Image 1 (tube, rainbow, N blue to C red):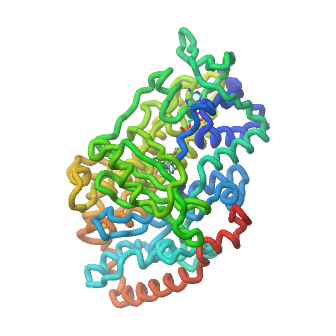
Image 2: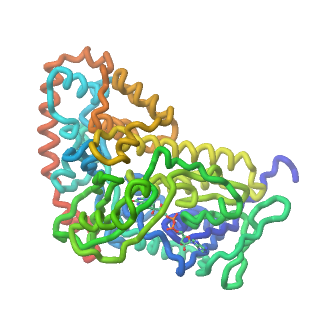
Image 3: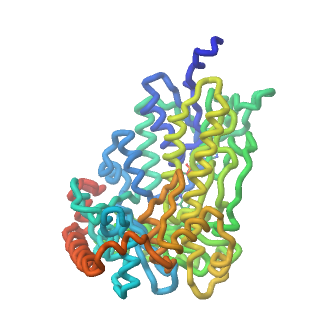
Length: 509
Ligand SMILES: Cc1cc2nc3c(=O)[nH]c(=O)nc-3n(C[C@H](O)[C@H](O)[C@H](O)COP(=O)(O)OP(=O)(O)OC[C@H]3O[C@@H](n4cnc5c(N)ncnc54)[C@H](O)[C@@H]3O)c2cc1C
């Protein structure tokens, strides 16, 4: 072939797995590439089913909806969805202390001076107002209210963002309908064997239990924790992070809401002796779970602890899950790309898995290969994917390592464990003078890090010296007004369920 002529693009794609990852990938590929002639076959096994969790998202989910031209409120109506303005962390610093990690900013930036520097300086001068008072997102959560974001915010303090909670099964169903309307070929069968090319080692065919064999040019492994293609067939290997993220099991158990009229616009995470529980309010039920370390509690005791947390009657049998925090060493190996749990998992504390699926899909579209499958593309895809996982990992580790809980061997271990160098560097710079470090591929930006530092009591010894050029009395007056404005705006919001009704997002509207 003439070296200047590109190889033809890959046009025959096979996805193994029809969970959230499989259907999100199918919908995106068909929407973006279907009209160009890219064909997608998706193999899933209704006998095996999906993991059945994954109900909380981060604001990036709205970009996914937009990329498919889906209206977020329509998605919410189809999935019993609710608004998520952040996460409440209860008992993480110590019992009795609760804070919200909001999607949004704090206070205002004063010229080049970041708000957290002003806050640190005021605290040194004896001001006691907590950081939470400067976050509209947090105040909305505390008031149980939701607002539309103003089109033209008057300042940083009016910036907040939102994500959704939804029924993951219904979301996958919605995307399946979307993909079927765009020509996906769906096969309900179980994978039995993977046929590899004898010399090159590429995947040639999936041999299924209905006697079909499915061939393609590119295979996407969305088989969940089974990792059947990327690791089972292609031996990508797994980077295990359990020494940093000890939780390796979870029990999910939905329940009826205590009061169907009151919906919290946030996820709740409560620290427990051997891990933490989640509570995710949907329109029709509450999703609950206990994520725990099997070294520190047995399954039966974890289930008893979870049941004691339920606010209403259990609506299903407990779903017992096992996992290992970490990621595959190669997300793209030969002609296979792993997206979703097959690529890795970092426990659900900050609801990042679905956003990592989105990043996987976006990168795949960005590096869409020719039939030569140039290994350089895979190399870059892998470098970026590992970086993305490491950035999320550090943020999650901080929730554990900064705890000051008494009791519970898990928490003592987490306080004492050696941390990754990247996180140590962030902590050192923040402690030195409140400096915030951002590496490439971050999922969490300055306000999120400030939120954790402030609420876990990670103290900055000093602050940006430019802050001292601002008069202390002016700062006191400015922050007093800010607190008042934020509290007043938060009360302009509508109660959550009323907001959903007004937005046309209620399932029964
Ligand atoms: C406890 C817990 C809580 C979570 N909470 C959140 C959250 O709040 N937010 C968030 O973003 N993420 C969360 N996640 C992650 C989230 O659930 C997943 O990222 C998401 O559901 C995608 O899963 P998946 O599609 O990769 O895998 P799965 O849902 O497991 O799908 C795997 C698919 O592969 C198919 N399959 C498997 N083996 C075979 C075979 N042999 N033959 C044919 N088909 C096969 C299955 O039938 C299924 O269709 C959570 C995960 C856990 C464990």
